[in-house]
Image (cartoon, rainbow, N blue to C red; front, side):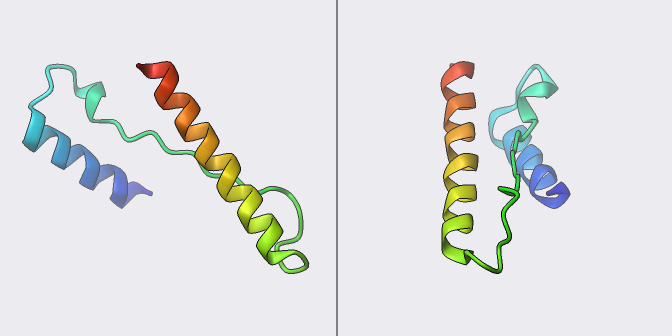
Length: 64
């Protein structure tokens, strides 16, 4: 995650020259569903993927 944030910040700074450095921040979200990923691999993996994507979309919609 640290490497991704650093790459993102460098690209934003290089391409867009923001006045406020907070604009370079990469916001991410990750979580586990709490279920055993070995017993229900596809269900748990898909549930976690959908939860994290919906959270990301929700944050983007709220920030605009």
